[in-house]
Length: 246
Ligand SMILES: Nc1ncnc2c1ncn2[C@@H]1O[C@H](COP(=O)(O)OP(=O)(O)OP(=O)(O)O)[C@@H](O)[C@H]1O
Ligand SMILES: [Mg+2]
Image (cartoon, rainbow, N blue to C red; front, top):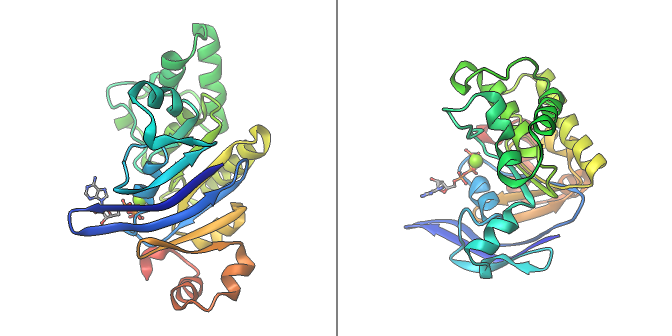
């Protein structure tokens, strides 16, 4: 379980997070939704301390992560798999080496075991026979899927996905959504997914949290959103599409 207490973060005069308090339950899928620029990626990066807050406290399975030193932090991050919004592949490494990277870094697996895991996770994201390809040779959607394969390769306890399906075609979007749901069901991982598509969020989420003007303004399921009188939530639901259009 991840608990955030009054997280505040500004960049200069830009107050991005203005008191975020909420709980991310263990073994469930939580989707964080909001318009472009609201701070969704910034919030996600706080969970593994890629960004430190100005104020507030974050507990992950009872550990106060802001008190960890560099060595403890490195160990702590092994719990997590993260898919960055831009996939963040290593440009100088081919697909195989990109996906193998966390296994080589963090495990004692043999070359044979690593190869078999790499191929297993690549197959899970619908990619085959692309070991030798370099990131620049891939489409945006393929890069995203390679990033996804890399983030699940270590079978982490907590998976953070920053817009895993943005820019993918509807069939691939469905496949990735299924993958997120299945990974969570099979491995019981805690998943945090960022999205700006509310309908898609309801399809996969146990809970949806709406980030707006630096705060979580509503958390719940479809019924809670539909019952909300908050003008922004109503507009967002009426849009029934992507938050970027609001
Ligand atoms: N490292 C940084 N330094 C300065 N400002 C930053 C930094 N990272 C993010 N910001 C600012 O924080 C705000 C929120 O950015 P963030 O990337 O979290 O938005 P987002 O909700 O993920 O948007 P999108 O849906 O477009 O990905 C933006 O105004 C952005 O310019
Ligand atoms: Mg973002």
